[in-house]
Length: 480
Image (cartoon, rainbow, N blue to C red; front, side):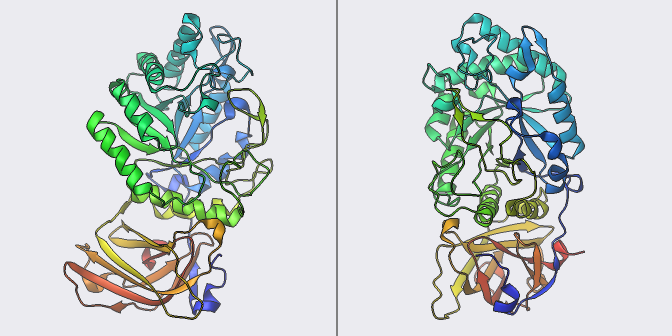
């Protein structure tokens, strides 16, 4: 259910539209977008640079593609990677590297020329030296353009690890150690990231106990889960990961480094998810909720996978077999036109840049207005502060595929220690729909008396509560 009928059904008046900001308009942000798989020619980058800039994300994850860069031993062709890095930077976006995969020159038994998962530490001294030489060459070439370097992709999954070996935290730690040393030989200031699929606390703990901590600055996790409910158990999982890091490597930061949802139910690679009703709208709902959860939990990066569907060449994993296309993009594959999720993510990028921070010191009440047939399910709220103004999100945290009906609710928000005086809190309130980018005037909220430490308290009657966040904020933040 989208908010197309808000004006008619809830008596709201549209007073304008959110003005999206491009990456060049945003000084800093924790939001990133995936541009992986160019090492395997899976999309046409020249078709994506304009929408990349207009999106407003400030980070882009690129894969360096050893097999594409070195086709003759010791001779590197970085022309394709140079162009991508420079065009991404020109769009106002900071690239960061995921280095991998293998190379048939050194691992001749790799099932496919892309050598996905072909970890060089298992293929002899020549393969290890070839890998280290490649990383030194990369470090020298990109030391002035790329600060963050992630070692391998999802090393705890069979499909991205060596076909003849089982994933191992200890063996991955060895790979990270030799790789970080090689990169820092020519790029001493490089920040090194490790990586894990899902949010595997056990794998993170195993890596740090094996001695990975001194080699890395970041641990990136990919919180895919089949149920497509971003909020489910997530705060507790993130806190558990933070606890592990605090105990074993307190200097290491956590990134949400990759996560996505498809825009259709069938006909793609990721049918392992529990899908029955995915479409462009439901993907857009998920994108907003995923990124807002990551930002509210104050992770240092919130990354979406992918900028576009991957359809130009077949998708392959470590066994080399052809797989269905990956269709998690916010641009359509082949034609590179925006999906509904593109607009949704653009709204989040515009409103939740580095100036916007989570503000946990609040209470809220989302109460049904008592109308017949309206059942409120899984009410959820998040509060951010931007330029001393609130950005308050409220919604029903159900599975987006359920298409739950909108529910009329009263919304009460109470804040502790807000920088403005209580009578200046939400003085000119508006309601923003991040999917349509429409902005609606709200009637003045009812000012409530102080309750304990919560000095700023306001209530709005009969607002729609959907299954994705609508945002209550000050008009000055969204309209010039």
